[in-house]
Every structure is written in structure tokens, then in C-alpha cells.
Length: 167
View 1 (cartoon, rainbow, N blue to C red):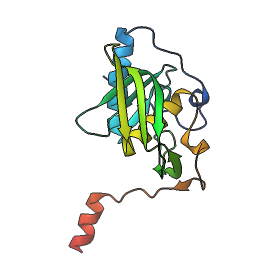
View 2 (view 1 turned 180 degrees about the horizontal axis):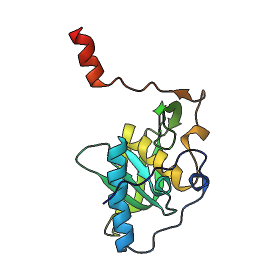
View 3 (view 1 turned 60 degrees about the vertical axis):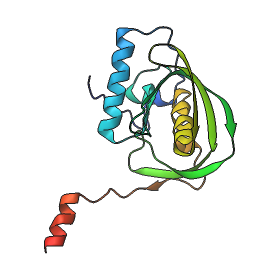
């Protein structure tokens, strides 16, 4: 398993449509492991294959800490309601913006064993599924932002906070 480079806005691969996965191979399995490692290392909750330079319809998501999802050839088959909230993206570091997404989504996909699964998500999971599936079609969340992107301030280093308390 390895940490892969995350492609950032301006890289042409992020605007291309991904191809379906036809079978599970050792390379695809390794890619999935690497995507999880890369996502966790970067502090993300979702990552799509084109974000690491691979034009395949694969998404990994972990918003529940104990139930990471692998979605292969995912497709949203049902949506309901609307939520508006802040989004960021590992491919657009330091930026965020408000985006309207469905409150609830139902997604059909294949799991890591290439078995059919159905995932129903609400709130953050619904937002994450929509965001990551957009990547598979060359869409970035900045294309959907309501009032423009804005800079996100980096969190202060905890060591700096400790130093301030000691002064």
C-alpha cells in the first residue's frame, strides 16, 4: 500500500469521464488500498480514482469511521430533498464553498468483491456520494458552488496552542 499523489485543479485528468471497471484485478485491488491510504493521510472523507490519476469508476468513502465504502461503477438511482452546505475537496486544497445536494441518495454499485450493493445515504454521506461520483464524470464541486469559492484558514497547530497557554 502506498500514498499516491493527489491531482489538483488544473490537471486535465480531473475533467475527463472515467471508464467502468470490468473485473477485479490485483492492480485494481492495490489501487483501492492506495486510495484509502491516500485519503486517510490527507484527512479526507472521500476520494475518486481520477484524483490519483486513474480514469476508472472507483470511489472510496469513509464518513462513519468504522464502515469504509468501496463503490465500483457507482450510479445514483434515487434522490430526495435538498441540503445546502460547505464542501471542500482534496483536489482544491485550501478552498471551500456552499453547494446544494440531495438530502438523501440511493446509490447502486459493485463492492470490492464485484458484488452488487445498494447504499443509502443522508446528510454527509449523501453529500459525499454525490461529490465523489461527480469526479467520475469530470465535474468538480467548484462548478456547482452557489456564492463562489473562499479560502479556508488552516487550523492552528496544536503545539502552537500549547505554547500560547504557557506564556
